[in-house]
Picture 1 (cartoon, helix red, strand yellow):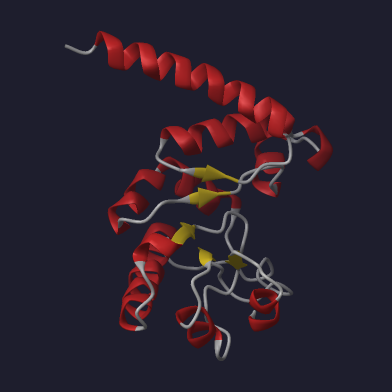
Picture 2: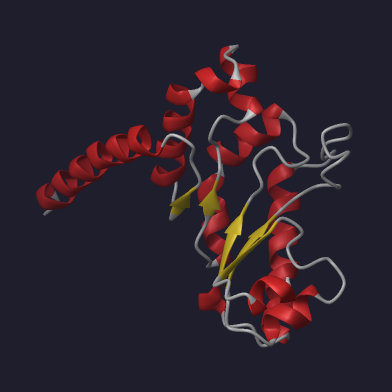
Length: 179
């Protein structure tokens, strides 16, 4: 992490959410932006034994504890976004629960970054191979934004942007018609 910062990186995308030795100290002494993700287990084995407890409770608790640690370390809240870690140590049903109940994560007071693009959960639901998941990926990204995500990580940028343009146009009309 320090090497990346020394090379001029502005944002750290940390799937470990500062759980690696020395990571909190490195970011606390810098001014970089942070994307901090919930991950159950370790990348090599996380899908062999996915999260066993309630996914919303586990993710909320994890981020609440992380937020306390960041504040104690003096890291400005405006520097970080939270990523619930779709597909990182979670079953398809747990991933779908995170999307269905995603707005609850907004109670943490931090912006959300969500990455649904081509995820295996979308293949589990649709039966489509990763390269064929453009429509499910766009639908999931749109639903994530509708439920409060400020940033979406996508592969199919143009298709996602076009869907979000329609959503924004409708939302603009909805706001205009509100008395």
